[in-house]
Length: 174
Image 1 (cartoon, one colour):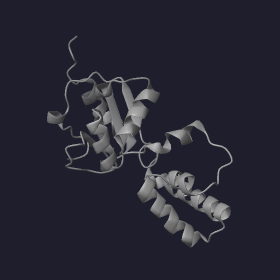
Image 2 (cartoon, one colour):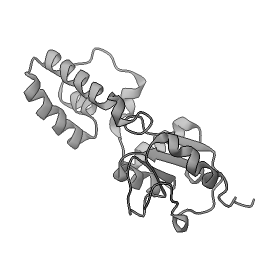
Image 3 (cartoon, rainbow, N blue to C red):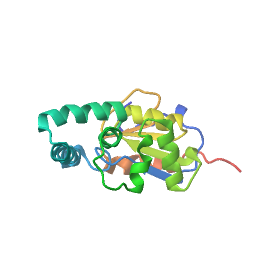
Image 4 (tube, rainbow, N blue to C red):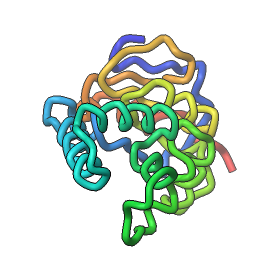
């Protein structure tokens, strides 16, 4: 699907009430270096805390990301390296694209109506999970023919190009 296009046949009638955004490479463009900076800081932390060379840490970090969905989750599961945890860490049981992660996001957003939620992400697999949860999906930074992708935009600033289509979707009659 080309950027800015809508997959109308996949979108039921919605009244948009919530927008959910992924952070890295979605709200913050890849060019700003946020993801690279986070990766660098995680590597430094793990190297220091686990007393391992950075090359070894890179392998472990990659394995944890693939296995657990988040490096932090892998650290929590395999090491006692945190003196205290934050509320956020308790939510790490489920990360995208696990269905429970979308339910938790809806709860944090104060809604249980996924049909009125637009979910923005740069990873098609995450949008597939959001679509299964009943959300409208927007791929940021790419194109895709996946039926899970309702819109494609190149950067978050392009939201203004699709917003009129989003808000003019047919409304549900009560």
